[in-house]
Length: 443
Image 1: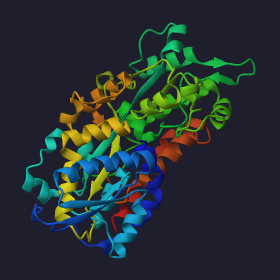
Image 2: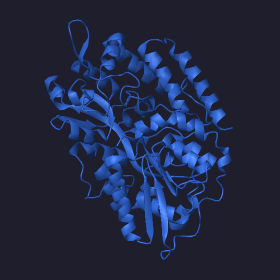
Image 3: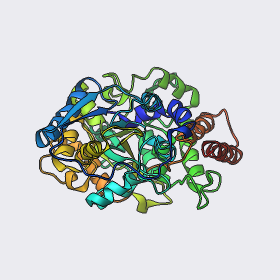
Image 4: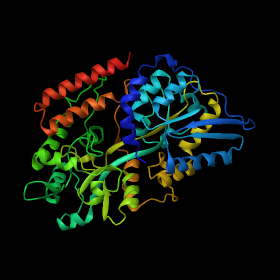
């Protein structure tokens, strides 16, 4: 399940819809305070973005809840988007529970009242949020309002081809960016005409999971200063990151990389370039292990934390995380039962382990991380260790959703590929665009 990519695809449209939803109501008061009556028969409507096999896994966990609470019947509806959730709220037909792949929109969900404040319910029931990593908690609240709970996470790290490593005489995965660049060059194979036959690593922004927000933690590049203003031009991590990508791009040749990426296999198909041996090292989420098992079972590969800036070797073990969020929409008719379902889905260890085993994602509680019932590939352990390691980062929540990610990504692509050459000026302009977007979203 590729929650990050689906979330990124939804960010633009959903953010535009949600930032204009001040009419949805305030966030005060939160969801219903009365606990679920165990004798009351109730039907809870649960919307999710899952489809096909993944929807079946999700519904199997909902069935686990129903077995424990036979008075609660659950109507599951898959294939739902943030836009559909918002439209349902406006039309007075909100589901009781809504799950979103778009963690980047948490600021919009919370500030507009699209999702109700869960804080009072969490306090009432003594839910221990300390069992959820800080980075995950960060993308489920905004401005003191926890309007969602996390439901599974994506964690990003390094995948590398063990056979290619051995052939190149590389005995261990790189830990710093200088080592990484050196290994990428050793692993690269070019034809006589200069075209790339095998890329050690593709530094092009937007190639597969190579997005600015996923790479930023490896340079400790922070988005906002203490006043909430964009600081890409003043935080050295950003210039270091883009310079590193530009230098490696120059090694390949921008035109050669453009031709190579234009011919790349689709990200989630069997001809994905790491899976077919056209790329030796790649940045990807834990979900890639499931794709490899299904589509390239003979691939000899391993995983490791992604390398970090030479300026911050102590960061090794950091990485980017995001994930699904789930909450109670404004206007939900059965809020008490909705919260009980959400609490089960997001805190029950057996439920989270079943999710993780079935969907190939990281479970979002420390109890589930160490469960002996987890049945995942050996290469998956890297992502469990990263998730429990205390060093993960995510991008900040803003009232304008994830619009700032596109602004930064567009400039990164322009600079790394050579169409923009003034890094300092470009980052300053990016800061201004981000700040203008944030101001717009706050209105």
